[in-house]
Image (cartoon, rainbow, N blue to C red; front, side, top):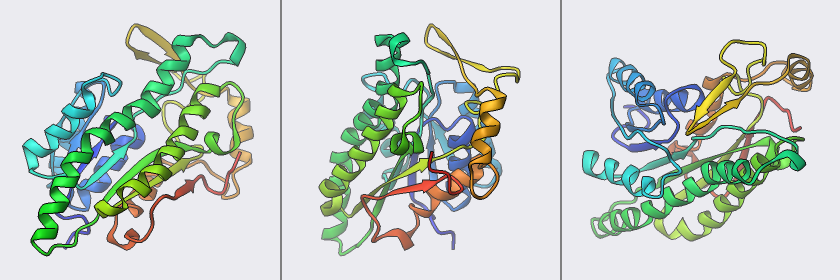
Length: 275
């Protein structure tokens, strides 16, 4: 029997990179997916991949920072599958600058995406989870749910040029710890994974093609200078940067029944790198 058979999972930012790997990993384990991405085309490709695996997925495309997105994301799961078991708050990007050059727009864009959006999704999920738990308890069932929020080693050690990202990701850790205490009575584990250097378009060298992303009306440069990337990689004790699949494996561990007594924790997935 698959480890997550029949469990309903939300994964934001699932169209590519780490989010795609997480969605595929959970689907392979038997979960029923609601995949989100800003780009409907990317989300559709992931949905097709999941169905090729023999799994089930539905798309909830759109900007996670939209005021109504959290309600829509949760409602898609309930209307389609009749339940909600796993929430992975993964959507995100970087918009770097030293503080004296950072605009209010840059600051709030990153805070809204990495911290406000997960807050709204989890707020929308609370009454649904509460109702499901009450029904299960009345029926003598004992089922635990999982929330996995995504943070970064930048939240733990800091990074020049990323005061917005570091603040947002540190906020995710605080959100995780507080919600673990609120939702323990709902038989829901709330944990966090802090990633180190994972190979995605955000961490590709700046010399590579496509080293920018479109967010709303903004075209944002992404990537890492080759010399600095070499420096980062040389500081990883395991000797190599992680793949999206490595990142997905860490999230998967916190979705398993074997993690039922782990809550309020931040697991660092970085090959030993701590900044």
